[in-house]
Structure formats: structure tokens, C-alpha cells
Image 1 (cartoon, helix red, strand yellow):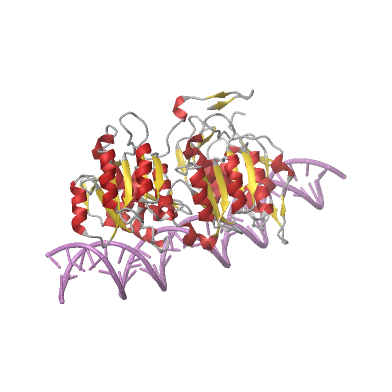
Image 2: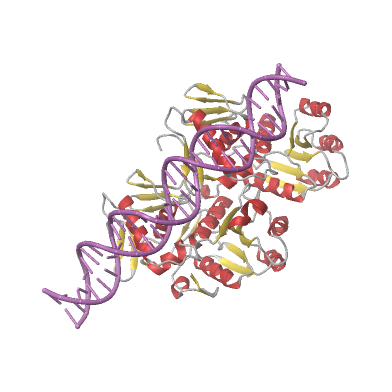
Length: 258
Length: 258
DNA sequence: ACGGCCGTTCAGAGGATTCTCAGAGGAATC
DNA sequence: GATTCCTCTGAGAATCCTCTGAACGGCCGT
């Protein structure tokens, strides 16, 4: 996803074609349902494409009133909710949502500087927020966290990712290789998480950029190479490498044997 | 839960896990039931979100009459009750509640300057109160205390929190590290309690603020950093540190080894 | 073999985040 | 009413993170 100078959003085809990976499912086995509420159609569209790609059922609403209307018959498990809506305020929407679907998770989208004021109290329960501009991986990760804690976790792996002897604990934000604790910066962590969520799948630099970096990032794909090199120094330094370059295409992470 | 290639699902029992780790359950194993009674919708919403997140079943009422009505069919174990209700006085509600559910615990919410002697009578009866504006952790702690004394403690944990050689006795309000008694101010204590209730889980500054500070606190997340630094001076000064900064995210408390 | 392209790495500027100190103001206590 | 203690603000310093630019080396075509 790229944010053009004119405010348009481009979505690369790649983003909507590959098969789903993650396994968050409702207790009854049906797919997770997410309602996206944002008055920017482009952003809402990109978000819903990514969530759908995650294997979830998605609906979109452009304002508070239609969000409530949709929620009533869609009964989502989670709602991605922009606090700046044209009609009803975000917190009001939250309250009315809760009145109808008490256990629903809400992920707020908010401007960076509007945080402290209106958002007070929302992280106190299970809910969470993400500040604009965000990266798609960040939104996904937060949403997965919310849903996992809401009882839609898949067996055993409660937010743990494993590739060979490399292990990531998302809650504790800990990464270990062969038991050795590895210290990562936020961007390194998010890049590695994206790789580990797609093991054995070659990821293009463009796609990595789209997912891991914020949508308003104007830089070049060179950063990806740079951060891959940082990661390699930290996790592939003294052991058979897990991160592999696929020349002219991108990068893969996979266990040493295969 | 495993998702087979043919679309089948296997569900194991342990997957249906509750989010946090409170360990308070009814004798018959069903979740604790709490009724929140407050005429401020925002406050009631935040309270119920927090309690629900704690794994309890929650109902909300906006005035005394509907509180009594709801209590009749909900049969709560505890009631969080604002003394200032639009219709019936809090004490009257208490009396009528007791008439129907004799063993119910009641936590009063009251203004700071409320009459002290009446409150004294309340605490004598086993109930408790919290003055507005309160922190959510305070409400939770008091509620846990009430419920524990009402016989809903799960075996083992009697209000003691342990992380490595750091021990907190919630009832005695005592903290020791390696046997050494540590003196904490009220805010320091509450911050540490929140950390110790969530060991190995990274807590964002926003979340800490929402939980540990009063809901009307208008300040910045900077206070959290400040109080973390106070805690470190008292707890982590001359021993392997337990409190760790996760840059760009928040803080974690965890035993020294891992 | 040569040259262009791609990927890797280094070095450093600039920015963001976090830590700590000092002190004002207020609450609690005696 | 005075004292002590606690909480919070503001500012500066220290630390850490991100990204740019450039140099280097290998891969692949011709």
C-alpha cells in the first residue's frame, strides 16, 4: 500500500492474492468477524483487504450511525474504529456498541496528538488503540492480541512464533535463538514478526515496506535491506542462517534444514 | 485448535482459556458476577470493561430502581454502587439488596467529602468503599479483597504476589526484596502491584496510566516514567533488575533469569 | 572478462524516547 | 497551624533509534 502525494492509496495486487496463514477462529469454528469504521474510503478499503486476507470476515462502515446499524446484524467480534467520525463521537459509538455486544473488542484509530485527551480509559479494559499513521502489521498485531485475549486463541501457541530454533514471544516481546535472548529495536521486531508470520514464503521488499512501515513512509526499499542486515547480525550471526535473500525478489525466513 | 487442510477443525479443551490471571471464581466454578451501578455512562462503561476483562460477568444499571430490578434476576456476587444515584439513596439500595441477596458484597463509590461516620458503618458490615476519583486498580483490588473474604479465593494465592525474590503482601501492604522490607508511597505501591499482577507482560504507559492513576488525571505519560524511576531506585538498586524498559512500548516486570 | 545491477554494510546526522534532578504545590499528619 | 510527606511539572542530559548517503563486493548478463 502506498500513499500518493495526491492522497490516493495504491494497493499492490500481491496483497490480495496469497492464501491466509493465521489461525484465530471463533469458538464455534466460524471465521472471526471484524467491522472496520473509517470515513476515509481508501484507508478502510486497504484495511478490510488486509483483514480479509487474514481469513476474517469483514464489513466496512463510513460513519457511526451505519457502524451501529451494521454491527447489529453483523455481530462482529472486533471493531476497528476511527475516533474521528463525521457524525457520532468514537466513545459514544463504543458505548452503544457495548450495550448491544458486550464482549466486543475495539481497536481505536487516532491521530498522534489527539491521544491523551479523548482516549483516556480505553486501554483500561481489553481495548487498545493505534495512532495514525500506523503500519498494517501493527494494526494486525494489535487486533490479533485483542482477539487472542478474548478467547479466540489457537491451541498451544498463545502468541508465540517459532522458526527452527528461533522463537518470538509476542506478549513478552522477547526473541530467543537457541535459548539465547536477543534484543531488538521496535522496527527490527516488527520486521522479524512479519517474516516469522510468513515462514517459507518469499516476501518482496515492496510488500515488506507496505506492511511493516507506516503508510505515509516516503522512503525507498533500501531501508528494508538495511534492516534485514541488522536482523542478520543479531540472529544469524553465529548459527546457520534463517533469513535468505532471493535475488531480484525479496527475502524468506525458514528453518535451516529446508 | 488445528485447522486441517480439508477444512476440519480440532478443538482441545485447554484452548478456551480466560484472558487474565485473577484466580477468583465462584465455588461452583462459574465466573464471578458483578453489578455496576452508576449514573455516569462513561464511568460505568469503563468500569464494566475492566471487570469484564478481569474475566467476570458484568451488568450495568444507571439508577437504584433498575439496579434492584437487575440484581433480582442477575444475582450478583458483588455490587459496585455509587452512593449518589438519581432516584434512591445508596444506603437504601444497599438495604433492599441485602433483603434479597443477603451474602452480596458491596463496594461503594463515594465523593471524597462524603460523611465519614456513615461510611464507617458500611465497612463494619464487611463491605468497603472507594472515594472518587479513584484508580481502576484500586477498585479492582478492593473488589478482589471483598470477594476473597467472601470465600471465592482459588487455592494457593492469598493476596500474595511474587516475582523472583520480590514479594508483595497485598493485605499487609508490605513489599520485600530478598527479605528486605521496602517502603513505598501509595502510588508506588499501586504501580508495582499492577506490574506484579502482569509479570512478563509488556504494559504500555497508556495502559498503566489508565489503570493506576485516577480516571480524571489529565497529565502526561511522563509521570509513569517518573514513578518507574522511583521504583527502580527502591527495588532494583542493588540487585539484578526486575523492571525492564521496552523502548517504544512500555515496561515489564520479570524474574532475573529470563 | 567487463560493466551494470543488486544487495550488503558502514558511518553519521537528526530525531525521538527515556531518565533523572530540582522544586512548587497540595494533601495528610501531628 | 505547622510540619512532613507525596505528587506532579518542567527542563536538561543521556541514550537509543531511524534513515540517508556512499562505498564495496558479488552476481549475471553480454
